[in-house]
Image (cartoon, rainbow, N blue to C red; front, side):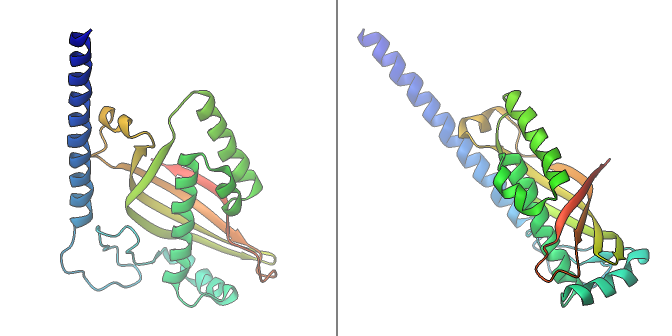
Length: 214
């Protein structure tokens, strides 16, 4: 039996060493990612697509020519001071929704989605759970927002934003990191439509439609 104990101890030590070096490697990957693009930033203006890769939230609001006039009126009705402030709130919602969906957090999703969109997301989460797919944590490395359409109706304002993002999907169970390549970010492009009723002061902007591109 001592031989078996020694073998078990060596196996345990081997796996602990593997875990340690994989964690060191992963930390280095994340550090390198955060240090990318730390050069002197160019001046940012509306329509300028330059952004800091060290911060996924660093952006300049980009608006298509057809949506510019409607966005000006929407900002006035919404009480939002700047275009960047509006897009910043939409980007926060985008990050939160994607992260909550990947984590299977239905309660969080219900705060930001319309009932119809929530039902679609909830169905996808259920199918994923039935298939035994792993819950993941999402880390964004880059997000580029662009307002592609804006509409104003009597009881509804809608803004459609194209989000081009890169993110890392990290399994919640650390051991799973050793069986996946997490060094390459996943690219996603989709148009999300946000809407609210301007006649209701406390009405929140919610996601009422999503469309994947590419």
